[in-house]
Amino acid sequence: MSDASRAVPRLLVVEDEYLIRMLLEDMLADLGYEVAAAVGTIAEASELAASGDFNAAILDVNLDGQEIYPVAEILAKRGLPFVFVTGYGERSLTEPYHDRPALQKPFQIDQLKAALDELLAAT
Image 1 (cartoon, rainbow, N blue to C red):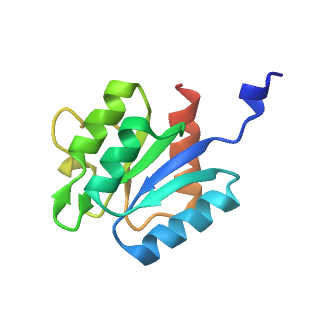
Image 2: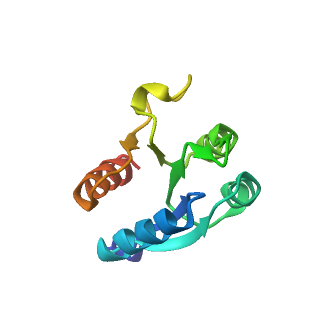
Image 3: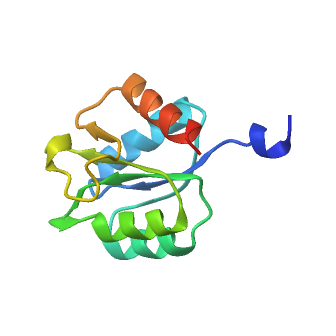
């Protein structure tokens, strides 16, 4: 087994609600993931999406009234997988993101694990 296959996946977390971001970070730690960065604004997320060192991202769709799609576009161009988190339902995702995985808030740790397992298995 190579070092790369044993490496703990590093995730970018983008969530504007501080308590939800903390809860998400705790869930990820419990699942054995490393949080590379956790941010709450489009500006911070865009900067990290363009040059950050992580394997995948968890993106809240609505950041204080701004949609996360510009960040998703950066990640897609880099070939990095991501999952959306939304309180509005998966059907609220705009084109071209209808086919992307999404978790409906509130979600449980087992739902998060399943989404991330599937997301990272595809890479």
